[in-house]
Image (cartoon, rainbow, N blue to C red; front, top):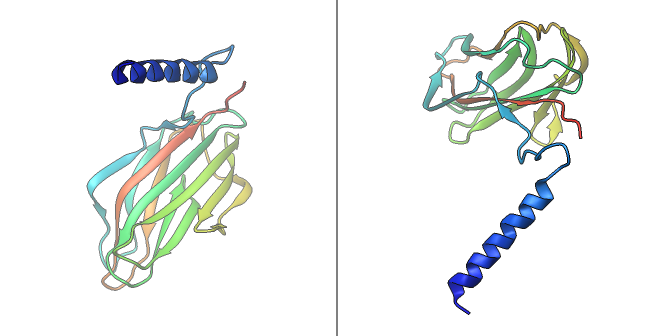
Length: 181
């Protein structure tokens, strides 16, 4: 048998099997349940803060009604570098509420800040802050201060450190709506 014919048969059978596995009586299941949000920012050159200055480095807007029901979630991931080997703290806030922070010290290695907001109601969310190998200190239950029916700013701020600043290369805002089977 021709090897191209065998390859074609194997590929066709694989596609059929994937189709059968991913089918649900209600709809086709999505491979990745996260959806990119318009607040996402990606840059090859980055957005840099100013040395010696405590400031908001970047602001993105989480659209109104992004989360609307118990079980909806948003994941925020920030990719950034510090300029020099001197500890500088980057803090992520949503609507002024601190949801993640981290001290960066290695300019040659990218750092990642990540947190999840779990919708409770229009003004409350559970915060799950992820740090390397542990749950972060900003993790908390039923935190007030949000306004999911209105648009909310996502800000990344830096502390003032002599000769140091952060450069942000990505703010990834992924939405995971409640999914019922």
